[in-house]
Image (cartoon, rainbow, N blue to C red; front, side):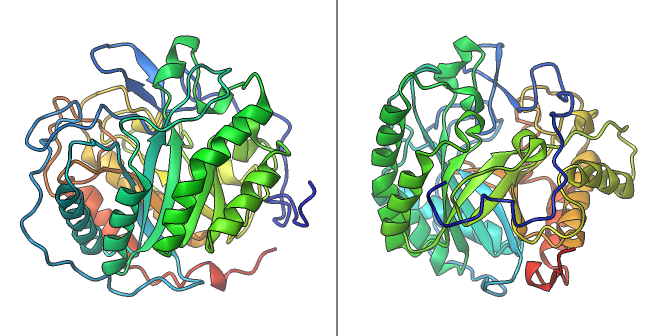
Length: 408
């Protein structure tokens, strides 16, 4: 790399394995979702049905909230400062251009108040961008991509609440499904053209994040096949000129375990869906050991430079074997989800990680409403009391943060 930086993770004491552990379920190590109007699953980590107008019911089983009439906004218990853990959630936003700025503002306040009620100090706003086939060289906005101005408005409201903010674009995978593709196995026919298009797409969003003093901008997420490409130098250099905060990259857990994730960024997140082959009655200790067995393949001891950018699991029987499975809807088991959250929080603390963001809350949903389990994704955690209790316990723990770690 031309940049005067160590490859990401090179600063950690690592034991690199030479191959990826067997995939956790039949379609690989990426969560499943179903296409609208079809029962055919496709591979996604961010999938969700199209945004729907307030007051209508969608495939997640929740009725989109008419925005709360309240204009009051709660404040976090203690604003995040450097060295503190990031306790947060991923807020995924597929925009509907027909929604007014007033609607967007009221939804943002609704979510800010919900997060503050969980004792969160952070939020990551994920939003989709689009491509064509796996070999396409063009990146574009779509109807569901929020404009930079609308994202800035949401970030502004979260700052009112005292929340640390991250902006995270995610490649939508709908167009890739015909090729059994996902964002991690794209193969642009012309990488020069792809990176030029991507940098052009990112530029206004970096400016918006900078204008609203976001703490982090995630320059890419789960782009396994493009990791280590020298074109990232230019993309990151441009990002650092436009954005004064932290520039990060979020790796999928298979790439993280396989070896060094060489990206010219200042921070690495991991979208962590480690399968643990145990029964539904497994103890929290057993789940903790399962996670540590995965992490130890990469590095033993503290991991203060790592943030769990995504963690989640279905509230259903058998979920430990495939925690990122969006598609399957087995019998609901809230305790499975709550125990998993408790275990992940323990791992974050014991390994002195930077924090965790739970996947996820959807922008058009009312997080105070119980999900309709006849149709809802089992990964929904908002409105599940046992999981919310586990989150609150995590976020109010006495963990001082990664600054207390001493690496071995």
